[in-house]
Amino acid sequence: MADNNSAMAALFSPSLVIFDCDGVLVDTEPVANRLLVRLLGDVGYEVTYEECRRLFVGRSLEAVVAHVEAALGRSLGAHWPDMIREESLKAFAQGEVQAVPGVEGLVRSLRIAQLPYCVASSGRLEKMRFTLGASGLLPLMADALFSAQMVGRGKPAPDLFLHAAREMGHEPASCLVIEDSVPGVQAAVAAGMPVIGYAGDPHTDAAGLESEGAHVVSDMSALARLIGV
Image (cartoon, rainbow, N blue to C red; front, side, top):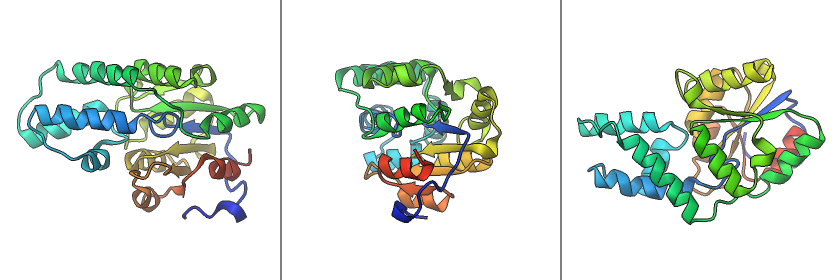
């Protein structure tokens, strides 16, 4: 279903809202992917910005490394993931990290409605705390952060969303996931959770989100109406 929400108020009635982080709460995808394109080129894996987003958005860094090493037929070295993480934090520090437009208002509306929420991201806790802090969202989110490093398998496996639901004390079917990546939508569907695909960024694969089972919206006000807050 595409974004035609004027006649579809409160389509979802979750007991818990689970947010992805990058691209849903904080606008980090452009900086992160331009950096990744450059660093992948340095090791001989040439990829365009558009291809990088299509291949890797929503996946853990470990999954990116595995993909690139398989394509190159060699190891990138044990230090490479840590180097990427370090360079990413430097890049975020150099550029202003913004909250996704409208998401702070949505989160505050959830708080007013006393509707529980949390964050479940492929990124590490250090990165989430950094970007959420830089965007001003951390005080609203700090109590419920879940990372793929806490589970055996990252997205598109359902493990992370199931872990977040279990820790927050909610049944999977009563949760609602907000995602901007195809692997994230696949993970939510595999977890038995309804999912809204946020496609506010023009590079987001909106058709891919929809084809995997997400209800796609392009702005946070439409998303808020679907939840009824």
